[in-house]
Length: 370
Image 1 (cartoon, rainbow, N blue to C red):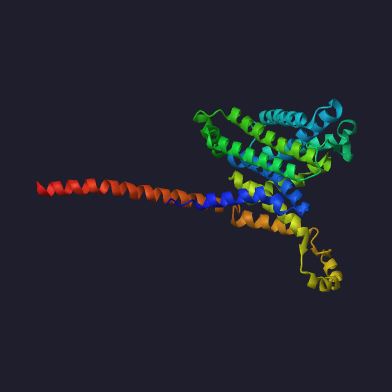
Image 2: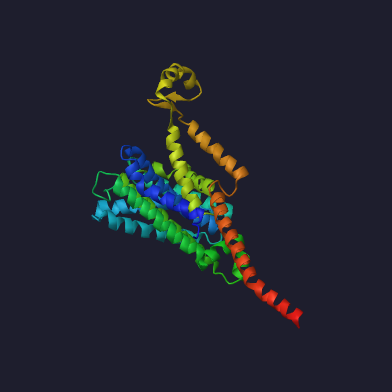
């Protein structure tokens, strides 16, 4: 009986767990909401990994593309009466058009200069949104119609899960096609790629358009789920969070970046209040003055970490960059895949040797008899 590879067992387990999450969390709606948001961050991190890890275009504009689609969808619904679905589609296309323009403007920019250009673009967009009160609501934000007429988180959960899986499937198809080969050749050496006949302009723009549309789709759907978007979501810190999620998961792995985003989002939420046993709460309350001196606090169920959770996250990022440059999750996935390839290669060689062995022996015997 043929053994099922371990990585397929793990993938099936994760898929079943994701499908069963609404049942497992039926009494914890807050964590179901967090899971839905985690898929939003996973779409952002994985699409950024496609742009930076595969195409070598280090951009800080991903959050801006997400917001462009969200604001476009909300404004079309508010001013023109478009349905949320039509608004999401239109907003995604608008994000793609802006990505086309930015990609064209960034053709000759590399690495640091590209990063600085996209930082400036994202900050300019944030300032315009913040100042344009009549159109975008300014600092007060823009209220949006809900995409689904329901008070339950479950339909939105499955919608975001479906979008994440669909976007990952599409990006993996793109990365494994000749387009992905061209992306990687541009990442390694643009001059050499151009000398081999790769159309640098075309594929740089394609990378920007595809990833900006995925970011825009994630943002438009997520903000119709929340029902609100504000300029405060466009700060550079949130873009840094997306990049950190991709780096910790593995910048050269789409699924690694997505799992890194899910892991980090859940971890940051859990670290807001580290739970402790009820029997320890009286002792913890007695220690509250001492805890407050070091920036901690006491909540209803445990220790409030406040800013310390971001310190822990920063330390994890530093350790990842220093010791695990391919991320924490990607090496595990890569090792599982390589083990499978190694076993298949060994099996093929053994099979080939067994097939060749009788022929060789027969020839030798024939030589002896003659």
